Image 1: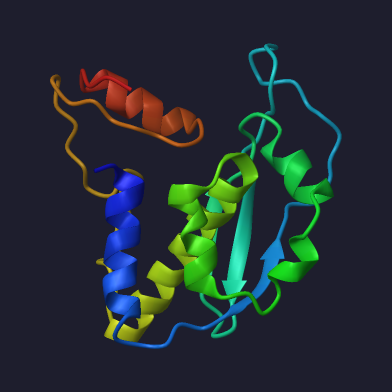
Image 2: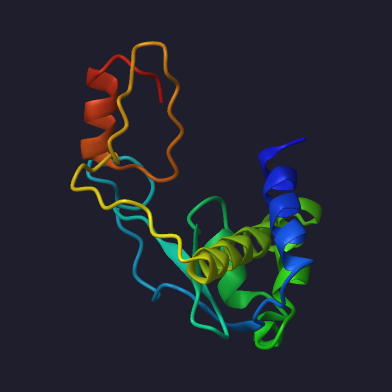
Amino acid sequence: MSFATDYLAQIETIAARMRLPRVRALHLPPARPDEPCRDGASGHARGEFCALELEDGSIGLSYVLLDDTLERLRNGPGLAKLHGADALALARRYVSGQGVDRTLGFVCANAITRCLYDRAGYRPDGSSDSIGRMDPQPDDAIGMIGLFGPLVERIVAAGARL
């Protein structure tokens, strides 16, 4: 099993017991001119995320600056058909899809998770700590989507690997 299949299995188990809202819209970041990274290397000086909104107002996020994901989302066929789409069917693309379909599945799974958290009344504890009270140790390997410089410095200073 992978994270994707485990994640989807949890969503499907809950969705079998309750009706999920349909997709309202996919929100993409505004087009901007390409900017060099702060270190002068290639890439963007910022992170970009898309947001998928369900009919109940739940929002899921996904990073879109890997490969040509953002460009394909902007120019791809069928994006207008997302309005009113079955959220669970779209979330299944996280496991079965490739490229942009997989991104759409992931962002939809995240929106469904937000919806389910709200229905359950789940509220994570607040944190003023930028790494959410994690205590990275020298043997830890930490995954990060996006480059968050201040977090990297703290994690590396603790001896953990990224």
